[in-house]
Image (cartoon, rainbow, N blue to C red; front, side, top):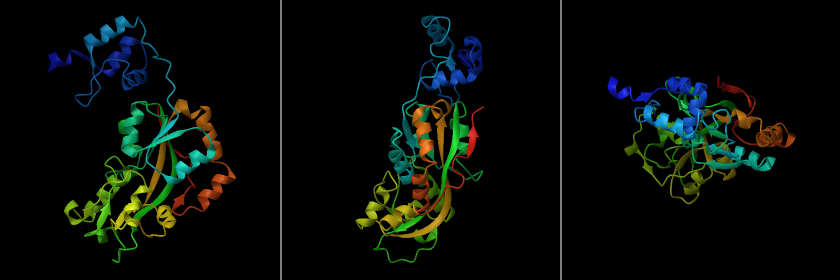
Amino acid sequence: MRTVMSEFLTTHEVADLLRIKVRKVYDLASRGKIPCSRATGKLLFPKDAVHRWLANNGTTPPAADEQQSLPNVLLGSHDPLLEWALRASGCGIATFFDGSLDGVMRFLDGAGMASAMHIYNRKSGEWNIPCVRDKLHHRNVALMEWAKRDRGIILSEACTRSVTHIADVAGLTLVPRQPGAGSQQLFEQLLDDAGIGESDCAFVTPERTESDAVLPLLEHKADASFGLPSVAEQYKLRFVPVIQERVDIAVDRKAWFEPAWQHFLRFCGSDTFANKTATTEGYDFRSFGTIHYNAD
């Protein structure tokens, strides 16, 4: 094992070799700029490949001290109010919402400048911070609170069952979300806590956004989904509150000071934003902007 491992360099050894900070090594690796391997779950660098790479690139690594600008795209979890705010602000930030976990992985690949998430850690009882510490600890990010919001069971008009708790969905046909969605991960945890297994319910095809998740209810293809009160109110469907979650946005700290993000933050301080959030069911913005994690 020692012979095999001697063929690889650690992150700190690469930093010493290149005379750069460890954070810059992680940045180069995440952008595919330096040969590396994650096969063991730990970031390792093939010694021979690194020396060849260094010889081909001169005495200093290209762009080691100059981080490339990330695209103005907000990744991760879909939140209807966040989507509205980005459009209404005119900040120019595009969106690619396909789930909290999907957003984290795309953020690692440099596909966007920020990623929204609501990832619950059952062991610690925390929202988002454990995931950021685990997945993004080497990235130059700040984790900003967007909002706390209620989440619960949305029921179709055709469902006549009395539902007051998560355990009451046993036997119903449910609308799941895609595996990378934070809401799906949370729903599965809550079902497990209530003693409900996969075989205790029927499931239709997964939906990818909060808004799309109610469509099978409107079409009478499913009885319930795990969603937001604002969406239930929009379609005049019954809503049973289950939990309050916290939605945060991991933002690249360099992108934080770019015009697009600053424009968006200014809009979030406007009367238009305040009026909209005050009249949208199920949101709590009193701690908006709180920084829950800041990279060292």
